[in-house]
Amino acid sequence: MSAETPLVLVLNAGSSSLKYQLLEPDSARVTAEGLVERIGEPVSVINHEQGGAETVEELHLPDHRAAIAKAMELFAAHGTDLTRTPLCAVGHRVVHGGRSLYAPTLIDQHVIDEIERIAPLAPLHNPPNLVGIEAAQALLPNVPGVAVFDTGFFHGLPDVSARYAIDRKLSDDYALRRYGFHGTSHDYVSHRAAEFLGRDYDATNQIVAHLGNGASMSAIAAGRPVDTSMGLTPLEGLVMGTRGGDIDPGLLFHLKRVVGMSVDDIDHLLNKRSGLKGLCGENDFRTVTEMIAAGDAAAQEAYDIYIHRLRGYFGAYLVELEQTDIITFTAGVGENAASVRADSLARMSRFGIEIDEQRNAVRSREPRVISTDASRTTVLVVPTNEELEIARQAKALVTS
Ligand code: AMP
Image (cartoon, rainbow, N blue to C red):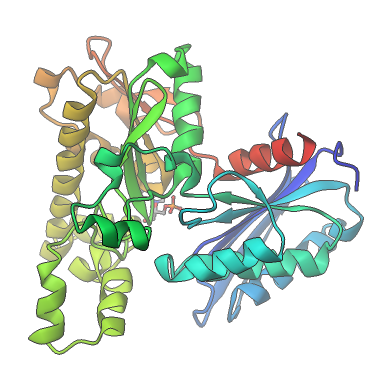
């Protein structure tokens, strides 16, 4: 394949999902896209859109390998044989790059081994990312694969936010530090926010709240990420769908010594049975919202804790940045849940932040302002587009 050919196939494998897109990075024109959800559950769902037609199928997809095979089948059913499509790269979202991998990287065996070595730091994500890499190599052996790391955007975090206050030698020997995640989204959204407002990226201070099933916040000072809520692993920080975010580490010793849980039990608890799911039994924000409307007290409390944590991080980052030009909400909850935006920034007019109720109620897939004209900080909703960012970075690497 020639490096000039424009299309990129992007594979974004989450813990139980797979998003994929075939797109042209410069124009952002999407030829085909799809989403597979509930991989590994009794009934999985695949939604594939191509050429104005949408296919939705419910079937059992036991693992990511099966999900990718099904996606390829649907490409073929819509007349696209990927092995004959001019592709300049396959771009892969890879969640954890550790200390050594952060810039977009051409995938070879050494890179695969390194992603595998780092997998214990992102056990829900790096293994499915590797399945995607292997599947693409098998299907498209002559197309360069590019890994784009979720941790990459935060690689240069200052030590004051990246270092844990633990024994220095231990953390240096084992590369124990705060890496940050969702970097591709924070990168894309913060640039899009500055562009949308006609501001110079390198002269704006921004806070981005990426609120999806996973959730993280970042503080960006004059175009440079200076803090983020996720740490060594994607467990730290905000309350999420199935992860609880910040806890007292003493809780872990208590769970082991007093409750008698194994390390694997605790890992499962913190990754799968915490956050909204742990608090009220559901991790999907839409379901939690319906439960609240039906008077469910546990769902209401889960929501209140979710908001309380968000407000704490907003407070910390507003102080850290001293002056904040833009706050942006993104991802499934951030783009859609108006109440979360309103409640997490309520009663902050003394800090120069005022949400406009009517603007906040608008539903759209376009970037939009939701603050009042008087608000010193401009508050935005900007739909994220990790796939486009991955495609751009992958193409830039193979054509450089
Ligand atoms: P993401 O990880 O970005 O795909 O976001 C997934 C989360 O966004 C899930 O918790 C969804 O319930 C939530 N979400 C998606 N659409 C809506 C909506 N219309 N209102 C509230 N939450 C939503």
